Length: 125
Image (tube, rainbow, N blue to C red; front, side):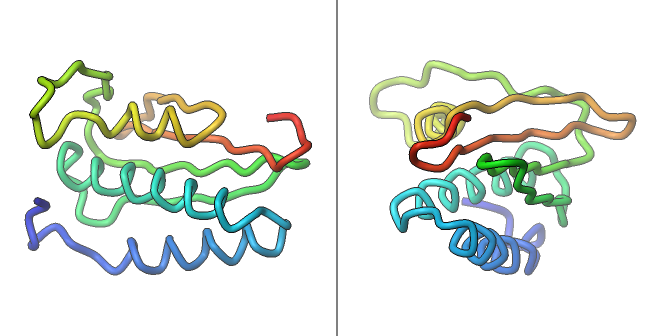
């Protein structure tokens, strides 16, 4: 569970913005739910591992592809791990990978930016 002292309203606001952008762009409810879950995972990772109380979230559309960026202050790059079968954590990036068309990480001057992309049905990602 996240440290409640790191909680910020950015999660609620970011989820609402994401839903609105995707609905206006014509994404299905299922794809919106997938993107919302991936967004939550990246924000929680920024809180938990990046120790960033208010990660910067950017949501953009280019052609028929949604891109979501979550930036935190930690220079430590995320890495997929192979958790034990009964482990309660460690599957976040696998989840993001499974819900989106692609994801990645970009080192920044101060920290990093983790992103994912999701194309519309019938569109190229």
